[in-house]
Each structure stands twice: as C-alpha cells, then as structure tokens.
Image (cartoon, rainbow, N blue to C red; front, side, top):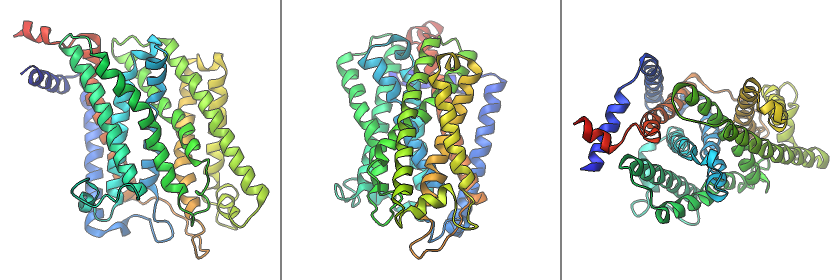
Length: 406
C-alpha cells in the first residue's frame, strides 16, 4: 500500500507544473508524434525510405545508438568519485547521472528497434524464449549487458528514491554492491559495442584494438557534457543545491578523458597515413576525401577542432570556472563526439564498399524525424523522472507529508 501511494503521488507530481513545463512536454510530445508517423511510414514502405543501401547498411540510427551507449556509460564519472572516494559534492548528484543513464539506455534500445526491418522478430533475442546464441554472438552480449545495466540503474534509483520517500536510510549492504557492480557494467556496455565493430575483419577501418578504449574515453566526455548543462538548468529552475566544485570537478575529469581520446585518435591517424597501406583509403576518405567525394571531410575536421578546443577550455582552470566558456566547451564536446561516433565512425567504415564503389550517404527526412522522435522520448522520460526525483531529493515528497495532507 505504501508503494502504491508512492506511485500515485508520483503521478500527481508529473501532472502538475507551470506553463513552461507544459509547453516543454507538449513540444516533446509533438516531436514524438512526428517520429511515430515517420516510423509508421517506414514500416509500411520498408527501409528503402531511409538512405541506407547495400553499400552503407548501418547509418544514422546505429550512429545514434553508438553515441548514446557512451552517454549511458558516463554515469560512472559520478559513481566513482562519489562511492569510491566518497566526495560529497558529487555524491548528491549520482541519482541525476543514473537517471540520464536510464534515459540513454531506453533510447539505445529504440534506435536498434527502428533500424531493424522486422522489429516484431525481437523475441528471437529474449533468453529462454528465442535463440539468443549466447555466448558465441557479440550481439547477444550487447543485448544482455545493455538490459542488465538498465535494470541495475532502475533498481538503484528506485530504491534510493523510495527509501527517501518513506524517510528510511537506505540499506548500504544492498545499495553498495549494486553501485559497485554498475561500474564494470558501464564499461562493458561500450566495450561490447566496440567489439561488435572491431571484430569485423572485413572492415579494416574498425578492425583496430584501440577502438574500445577510444569509445570509453570519448564516452567519458560526451555524457558528462550533457549532464553539466542539465545540472545548470536544474540549479536555476529548482532548489537543488548543486555546488560549483562538483561542476568544475566533472569538467576537469572530462579534460583528462578528452586528452586520452585525442591521443588515441592521433595514434590511429599516424598508423594509417604513415604505413600508407591499401587500408588507408577509408581514413583518407574521411579526412581528405577521394577525388570529388569529399562530403564528410568538413565534418572530420570540425570534430577534431571541436574536441581540441573543448579540451583546452576544460584543461585551464580559469576557463572551466567561467560559466560561458564551460557551456561552450560542453556544446563543442557534444558536437565533436557526436560527429566522431556517427559520421566519423559509420560512413568511412563502409566507404568505399567492397567493390570499390563510393556511395555518399546523407540521412533521409524519415530517418531525421524518427531520430528526433526517439530523442524527444528520451528527454520526456528524463523530465518525468526528474519531476519525481527532485522533490524527493529536496524532502518535499514524503510519506509523512502525504499522511498529513490526508
């Protein structure tokens, strides 16, 4: 009965808000509706309405999936300082990071679903019902670690919020193992994603052992970049006490992660151009183009420049403590990593194709609308979870308070 009161109270919180809250939710719902309409059209017509073809069979959907796996994994950037080193300014923000991880995991699953021609056959991947082909298939590993990581974060956040609601200290012997267990799972979701790529011997552009650490390094930049913007919004719109020290420490950790990411990128570029083997053609297409085929070259250099400038901004203490420069750095990192894990990862891996042909892919309007709908769904889920989590964290939504009101 207490849990039912928690759920009913949470529903009332979600339905209450000011004009800005309602306008934001209406905007997201409109985009979700447009995305659903575009997806229905895709289901009726087939994947031909996308611009994916035999030459480029993974594209915008899978690029977004790869990027969002990194956003989900970045929750450990808060978990480690908070629970391993017991740094209090960040410990208070762990729930916000784990809520972001939950939203990102849900968006990941949606992007994989819309990329399938027959999503109704997903039951083949359900353990004990379909043929998951575990442990031989890397896709089976990806399905398991992503869903288990989602379940872990849901359990941790749900338990902590419910404990605060009933005004009961959380049982550390229950929470601590789950939190610590979530760290290797956060690493594993992006590592397995990288293994799906670099295990393909026929795709030399991805067949590199540094792909997994590079994925993780970039993930520890992009996820916190989103979180830093959200923390500043929450500090202005709620009574949550988010310390400057926590924001600056996250930005500092992002600088170190970006340093590793830039080093690994440079090492891979050096290997390709110095060795000048036949496999260099994919990296060449990305950075300098092949003949008149140079559509993605500007994006390659934009990504590098964005990442490097953001690295400098977060490395210099005076810069990362300046609100304007901090936010500029967050936007640059988000854009740089988004390009790197979308256009920069997928398209050169398929171009030229195995027959030497060059198909220059750009996402179709259907792909853009479906993707916008999925991102909007993720933002709406995060907004709804925050609408419940913030009052609980502030002590404004408690069982004792509901009892007094009744």
